[in-house]
Amino acid sequence: MKPEKPKTIHIVLTYHCNMRCIHCEFWKIKPEKEVGLSDWKKIIDDIYNWLGNNTVRIKIAGGEPAVKVFFYELMQYIKEKGFYLGITSNGTVFSERDIKFLCDIGINEINISLDTLDRKRYIKIRGKDEFDRVLQNLMCFKKYTKVTSINLSPTIMEVNSDEITELVRFAIKENFWITFQAVFNTFGTEYYAGWYKDFALFPRNIEVIEKAVREVIAYKDVYRQIGNSKEQLLTMIEYFRDPGKNHNMECNAGNTDIGIDNVGNLLLCFNLNPVGNLLERRIDELFYSKEADIIREEIKSCPRECKLLNCVFPFSD
Ligand SMILES: C[S@@+](CC[C@H](N)C(=O)[O-])C[C@H]1O[C@@H](n2cnc3c(N)ncnc32)[C@H](O)[C@@H]1O
Ligand code: SF4
Ligand code: SF4
Image (cartoon, rainbow, N blue to C red):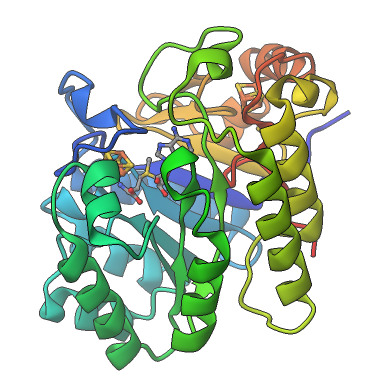
C-alpha cells in the first residue's frame, strides 16, 4: 500500500550548539559540511512542489537552529512560501530585534526548552547560566507575538521530576503552551539496549511522576495550553515505570512525521539510516523509493524505546 503523505517535516538545521546540556551531546558531533542557504531554499521548493503548503507543517530544530547565520533569512523564506512554521530553540541566542523579526514574519510556534524554574537546576541541566536570558526572551516573544504560540518544552528527567506541576502553573499564568518530553538516552550518543537501567538522568521516583502527570491530565480538562495528548501522558507514566514496555507499541516514525538532517538526508527516523540525499534526488521520489520501504519495514519491528518522543508520537487530542 502506498504510504500516506507526511504531515510534519522536522528539519535539523545544524548540530552545532552554544549550550552544553547533560541530556544531549549533539554539540559534540564532528562539524560536517552542512546544507547552505540556497540548497535549503531548493529543498523547501521541493517540499512545496510535492505537498503544497496547506497540509504539511515544517518544524525547525537542531542543535541550536538560531546559531546558523542564515537562520532568519531561511525562516522568512519558509513563511513567504506560506508554510506553517514551528521552531524549537534553547531560547538563549535571540536578541529583542530577532524576536520581533520572527513574530513579524508570522512564525506559528516557538518552542523554548525551559526544563526548570530554578536557576541552579537550569545551570546543572544546560551547562551554562542563561536562565535570565531565556525568561527574558520568553517575555519578549509575549510582547511581540501576533500569531506565534509560545510553547515551553521541558524534558522530564530526574533533576526536575518534582517540578512538573509548577511548570504547568507557570505556563498557564503566563499564557504559554507547555509540552513535555520524556527523557531518552543522551541525544547524540550511541543507542544500547537497556540504557535506562544505569542512566543517571532517568527519574526513579515513579510515584511523584505519576501523581504529577495525572495532575497535568486533569489540567487539560480546564486549560487548552497543554500540548501533549492524554494518551501520550498516560503512556509516559508507563514509560517511566518500565521503558521496555514500549517495545510492544508500533512506532509512528516515517508515517505522519519525517525528517531532514543538516546534510540534506531524508530520514524516516532520526535514529535509523537515511533514505537518501535531497541534494541528489527529489523528496517525493525518495519518499516512495524501495530504500524507504526497507526502512519502513525496520520501523515496524523497531525495539527501541523512543516511540514516545514528541517528534514521532501522534498528537491525537
Ligand atoms: C535536541 S533539542 C534542539 C533544539 C534546541 N537546541 C533546544 O534545546 O530546544 C530539542 C529538544 O530535545 C530535548 N532533548 C535533548 N536531549 C534529550 C534527551 N536525551 N531525551 C529527551 N529529550 C531531549 C531538548 O531538551 C529540546 O527540548
Ligand atoms: S538540548 Fe538543545 S541546547 Fe542542549 S545541547 Fe542539545 S541541541 Fe544544544
Ligand atoms: S522506536 Fe521509532 S523513533 Fe525510535 S528508533 Fe525505532 S523507529 Fe525510530
